[in-house]
Amino acid sequence: MILFLEQLVNGISLGSLYALFGIGFGLVFATLGILNAAHGVYASWAAILGYFSVEYFGVPFPVAVAIGVLGGGLIAIVVDQIGFQPLRGRKSGMLGALITSIAFLIILDSLAGMATNHQSWAFPSDSFPSGMVDFGAIQVPQMQIIIILSTLICGGGIYLLIQKTRIGAAMRAVGWNAEAAALSGVNPRIIILLTAFLAGATSGLAGVLGGAATSNVSYMLGEGLLLKGFAAVVVGGFDDVRGTVIAGILLGISEVFVAQYLSTTYRDGFTYILLLTFLVARPRGLFGSRDFVRA
Image 1 (cartoon, one colour):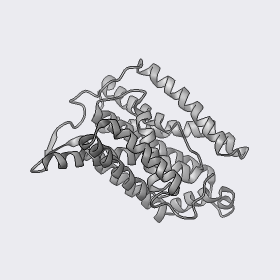
Image 2: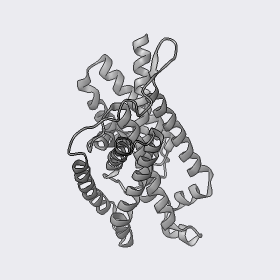
Image 3: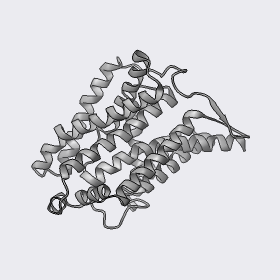
């Protein structure tokens, strides 16, 4: 029973990372109509920036997290304005944006590899909360608790932002029709910049927290999150933050239990099967709205 509870917490923590990463991925797709393959690199760069901040400047871990989040958001804005904004002006379709995002993936991935000398690093053990919290029968690492709380806070905050505020209404309006939104007084350019920043920032948060929790800061970090985050968005629904969070957590729990009670061989295979099943049978996901159309 103790093993079951420990693995359940491990699964929730792992799934929270997928969900946190997937929130930004879905936000960009639902609002800007971009399937951004470069989204994973934001997480890699955020983790690298956080690591540099701690290792070379000795900043506290919360400051390193803030630097990573800010860095991820700013990189996302730069990519959007250099790569995607010209395509919007020419009204290019999703294919053009996808190809452009792949180009940025290759460029930023290569730069991240150069910055890390293609090595995997780890935050110093005394630089982040690495203790255990006693919950009676089990002990839970502090970083797992931080990851879970961060996902719930970010997921809840972005959901309230989108659903309950004028800014969120403007984001939904731009996602539906940018020209019509502009006629009603919305500035699409500001909304696009805000959306890109939020997407990069949430990806960056997942990168820094994941890099610290797994002792893996490398240019490959984002690639590991990309497929799982995409799966969380597909299963949960592209236009529903709640669905992405729930699906991401369920995906993490499933992966951990498959690895524990079946075999680690089937761990990623389960994700592929689940992803293909939803793409074919229920492309709008578990919680996506019926009238959501992209493609």
